Amino acid sequence: MSQLSVSWRRTAVVVALSAGLFASPLLGNIAGGELSALPVAAAKPSTAVADAPRLGSVDNFRDVAGTGAGYDAQGSHHVNKGVFYRSNALAANDADLATLNGLHLTAVYDLRTSGEIATKPDRVPAGASYTNISILSGDVSGGMGNLTSPEAAREAMRALNRQFVTGAFERARFAELLTQLADQQGPAVFHCTAGKDRTGWTSYLLLSLAGVDQQTIMNDYLLTNEYSAKSIAATLAQITAAKGAAAAAIYQPLLGVEASFLQAGVDQLVADYGSVDKYLKDGLGLKGQTIEQLKHKLIQK
Image (tube, rainbow, N blue to C red; front, side, top):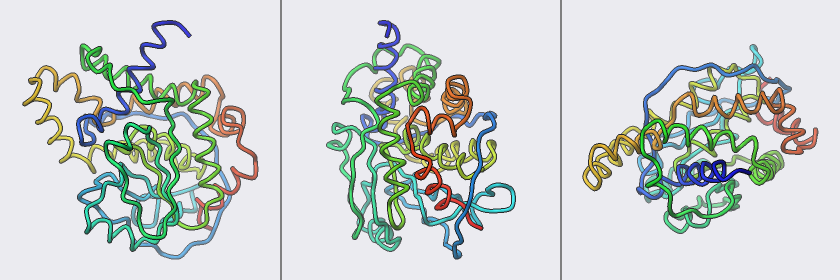
C-alpha cells in the first residue's frame, strides 16, 4: 500500500472516531444519490411490531426495517421489524435504558475500537449478551489536524466506505458480525460510535439482501442527519466555540452522512465484486447457509 493510501486510511479511521472525540454524533447536508442494483431473497412470517422508540440519549437508535409495515422487500413483501436494530453508542440514560429493556434484546454487537469504548461505554440492556467486533484495526488518536477543507473531510469519509470493501481486516470483521447476526436467536442491535458509517454499511448489506430498492436504502442511510440533528448542532457549536467557524466548517462533514459517502463504498463493491452477493461470498467468505439465514430473518412472507 502506498504512503498516500496509508495516510488516507488513517484519516478515514479518525473520521469514524470523530463523533466520539467530540463527545457527540452526526449531521451533514442530505444529498441525493443512486445505488447500483443488487440481489434479492427468501422469507419468514412475522407478527405486527411497533416502531422502534425514539431515544433522547441514544438518538440514532432505529429499526433496520424502518417504520410502519417495514420497508418493501422483493416488491410484494416487507422487511421484518423487531429483528435487527441499528444505533449509535448505547450510552443510555436510565429512562432510555428502561425502554431498551422493554424490547427484549438478546444481543448487542459493538463495532467500535477499544479506545472508543473506553470513552463512552455501553449500558447493556437486561438479558442481552455483549460482543465487541471492532471493524477497524486499532485505536487512532491523532490526525484530525491533517484535514484542511470540507472536501478533504468528505473524501476521507468516502475513503472509509471504500475501505469496507478493499480492507482485508474490515471484511473479516464484517463477516464475523453477519455470521453472528445470522445465528443469533432473538432481537439484536449493532452499533458504532455515531451509528452511521460501520453501522450504515452493515445496514446497507442487510437491506440489500432483503431486496429493498436502492433509493430506499439510500434514504434510510441519510436518516442519520434527521435522527441526530440536535446533537450534531450541539457538537458544531462546541467546535465553533473551541476552534472557530472555519474549523467547524471543515469538521461538519465528518459528523453526518452524505449520499456520496455510501455511494463510494457501493461503487467500490460493484467494481471489485459486481454484486452484494459476490461481495458476501467472495469478499467476506460467508457460507451460503449464513446468507440464507439472514434472508429468512429479514423478509416477511
